[in-house]
Length: 557
Ligand code: VG1
Ligand code: CO
Image 1 (cartoon, rainbow, N blue to C red):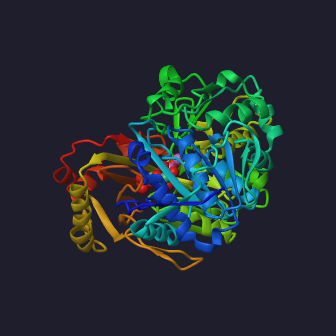
Image 2 (image 1 turned 45 degrees about the vertical axis):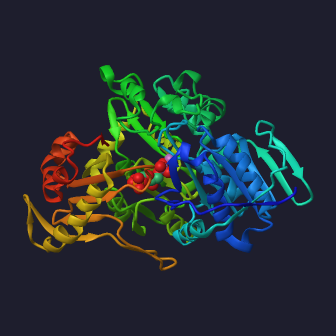
Image 3 (image 1 turned 180 degrees about the vertical axis):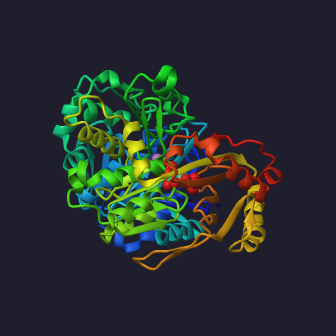
């Protein structure tokens, strides 16, 4: 195809956040906004990307199909050899990661703003994943941002016909470029079949004593739920809720937590709960929420419980775990499991990109974040359906030979009795004024941290240390600083403040609270009750109300 150079000018603010570039869909879909970023990406990658193959797909939100046409034409003009596209431009984030790894691709582009709402009035996003399937490291995202500041032309192939995204198969454009539309599901499902014991799962899902429900929140895992839970695992179709993906996610907020997954929460909690197991996933299929009957598993506990049971219940881990990792704000439940298993443990900044190096180096098998992200080293992204299958595997195994159903709650309570319980919760203050939020962080950094010396008192707590979290990657030595204000107390309780890096406007303050309890009589308290004193202390020292005018968080998870 004929290459054309289209003049353009830099657009401000095209800086990658925690997970790709996210803005209002209106912004992305107007003028050269998307094209500028994509061209900047190829400029940043330089000669290395020429002649290479990438994968392209997304979470099915509004503008993805048009974006796929724009991106493919720019890819062709920039000398790529081939673009694999998920059918209908659909690929869950972990599926894209799986495809990069399986097919040995140079990388991939994922069109998603994840759990942010979709539609013409809502959010859009894009990110680049590199050759082991991992979100691009900061070295690359920083370079892309530099390129966006000086970009002057976009290379594209305006005469190239649009791809038929619905037809699986390869189409050649000229001598040097082709596009292959591939199944959104096949590669990913094959990988899951290698990781888990599908025979065991099939048997368990058909057992009359067990019932489950999966809610795709009208988002991308809707495209995966039937082929995986029903066709491959023999589950009932009635178990699938909201599994027809929609461009606006049915007007909802595709975030699997107790606030936004209302329908599922009602099914699992009202009148004592209708199902034994319930799960949901987010916009792009990398997050998960795990529920038992009338019972919530916090993501921080989930990763710890999966790690503790992995070797026994999941064939992929039959030789044991190489190591485990969690993001800094995630509770210390996983640390206790790592110590018991005697495996290496890592604490990384928020965002999945920091786990990739550890996994590539063979130092981490299972990792997780408090933000409903859990995963293993079968891919380099968090993986919602993987987490669901991990929990189903634990349940299936524990129920082998059992007369009464061993429940999600039974597994959790047994875990807490063994390790103690890390009570945890997160308060989100969404849509704050950016200046006020920054001022509060500055207050914490310059006033609170310096005065929080070892042994000093904060409310009824004694400070052990306070800092602004900094991470040195043990593999490549790169340093990420200012990753969250952390106040750790002598009993291991923690207060953490950070600003979100995934929003499309304003500022979101996240407050994370953790308190450890090993008194066996206190394993089943209400988390909000158990954490009340420390939450009050956090709000007091941060002066959050004064700075933001907010009486209450918008979301509690
Ligand atoms: C949030 C979460 C973080 C997660 C990120 C991407 O980031 O806190 O743990 O990795 O979203 O998840 P932030 O910067 O807003 O706190 V997803 O499912 O939106 O790709
Ligand atoms: Co997501």
